[in-house]
Length: 226
Image (tube, rainbow, N blue to C red; front, side):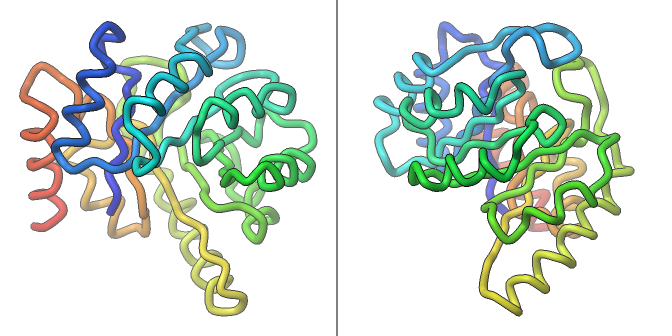
C-alpha cells in the first residue's frame, strides 16, 4: 500500500522541512488538500498553486503530487494546478457540472485524473467514469469538518469499487487506483487494505507531536505487515 501524507495538518512555516523528512523516511507520494473557503462546510481556505509550485521545485520530478480540489470552480481553475506541477488532479463529483468534459480536459493536458466522493454520495455515481480516470478517492470523513472519526460504513463502497475495477482490468487492462482519506491511522490501515484500498492518505497519523514522520511511518508499516 502507498502511504500519502497530507500536509494539511502541518505547520505551514515548516512545510519544506516536513516534506524533506517525509521523503527521507521513504515517502514518494504527497497529497495536497485545496479548499477555497466556499465549498467545504467549515469555510476553510488552505493554499493554492503558488505553494504547490514551490513544493514541486523542492521535491523534483520523482515524487508524485496529487491535489484534492475541494472548491466550487474546479472546471475553471484546474489548469492552474496542472501548471503548478501536480501529477494527478482529483475533483469532487458533487461539485462538478460537466464531469465528462473536465476529465477530457485534464487528460488532454497530460495529467492523471481522479474523482472523489463524500461519505453520503452513492458509489453508483462514480462507476460510469471508471474507464476514463486513474483514481477514485473515497472520503471516510466529511471534507472540511474537523474532529471527525473514521467512518467504517464506507466499506461497502470500497468493496464495490474493487469489484468493478478488477473486472475492468481483466476485460480491458485499464487499472484504477482506490485511495481513502479521513481518520486513517496505524490502528485501522490494515483494515482498509483488506477492503481493497491501494493508497491511504494519512494526516495527523504521520504529522503529529507524538513522533517524527519516520517513526510514525514505521508504526503504520508495522501495522500493515502484521
